[in-house]
Length: 333
Image 1: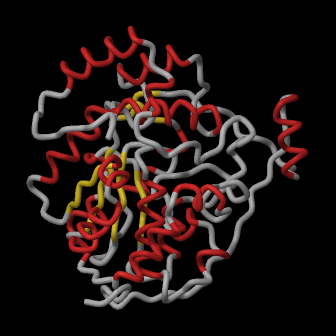
Image 2: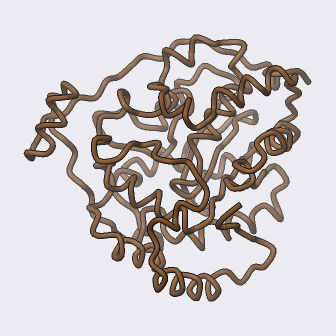
């Protein structure tokens, strides 16, 4: 198997750009909107509610019937994770591994969120994630999700699709999630850091409990052989090794030169400057004047946020909820 040739991949650049513009409704939004030339109404921050036992918001449940009836194809690749686990990083890696040589123009003309659609998103006027996935002309199709394992459309299992699950240690996850929630207006209103941390520990987050999410996907891995479970910390520590493992799972055989091109392209500083990947000009619900979408990309940034008492309390809570000793997370490398 050669680089970028798995499943006879095709790349037809038939994407239609859909720009989203909003009208400011607060003084802070007005300054931001003026700087970004936005003219339609900003979305209202949603309220968290219980959805089949999982905390969710309307932007991920309003299209539920179409999500559950989504027709996966045997060569589809699903990139799954709890929010803020390095999903964008891995999505970009896979897009480059499959299509970097074949369709280099995609990297500069088509936003990453259109190349790798977010399956469950339904936040007008943005197109629905299911529609973007259906419209993909690439083969294989790369599709992203944050759904808990029990919510994944059954067709992915029936078609034996390959799934890449990305996990990140909870301390860095909650810090990243906190800053992202401040930026992204389609997420619930954010209180102070202490309140957000407590909500995270109690599972009062969009897509539910981090603990349940990472554990249930880990358990699925034991019975579903087409699932590759990878860790953000491992990828940060040894990108080459983890790329080799990922390629082995996918049946790809990139050359050393091709792998180096991927590594260089997805380096954090390069992605942070890439307008097709950093959402700075493609997703206008994010006020990146508050905090950039790609903030630091480091392991152990949690040390700059947790107090000593918060860390002690978190560690005790972690011990109570993470009983599976086979699933281990590193909070520093």
